[in-house]
Image 1 (cartoon, rainbow, N blue to C red):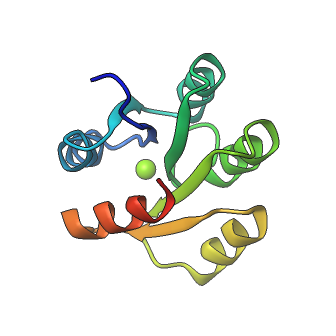
Image 2: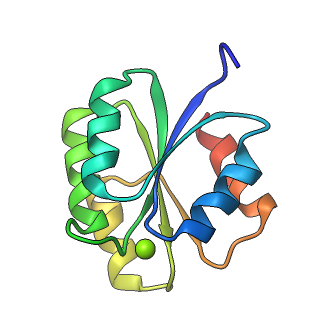
Length: 120
Ligand SMILES: [Mg+2]
């Protein structure tokens, strides 16, 4: 749909990708990617992406390194970390890099919608 705000999802777990799409696609334009490389390529191509939902445990490039790159190259883009385990260490590292929000797995639809709504 035209004029819908665009969200990029970087998540290697297919079930979680689909769940996020299901929850968000009524309200936002969703782009799904499976790893950091795909995600960053997408971010460079599509300059209208306003928010990235980013998994931390990803193949090849770690989510925190992807977060650093996003903050460097697209600082206007909001970043929400989706993390599978509540690691204080990970959250504090992500905060230092400049993550805007956090969602812990397992999540429900209202967790996702409320967190995203804060930034969009
Ligand atoms: Mg993962």
